[in-house]
Figure 1 (cartoon, one colour):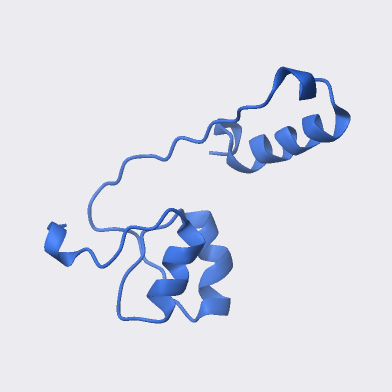
Figure 2: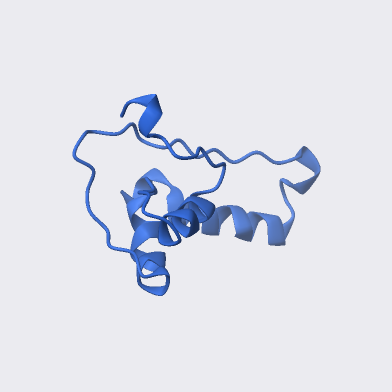
Length: 87
């Protein structure tokens, strides 16, 4: 896409979807997120016409929380949602 066709660059996929819902723009967001929020925002979804790079998601935490049960649970939930094992 040519730079003159880009309306906004946003740090949040949800913010991008909200802008698309309130304008004539198109947002490029992860498919699973699009499936969840398209209906409530009144958006239509479609696969992009060009291949897009994959999104890398990484977890970081301080060593003191490595064995914390709540933190371990949250990390496992995030991994289950976004980890390679789900693809």
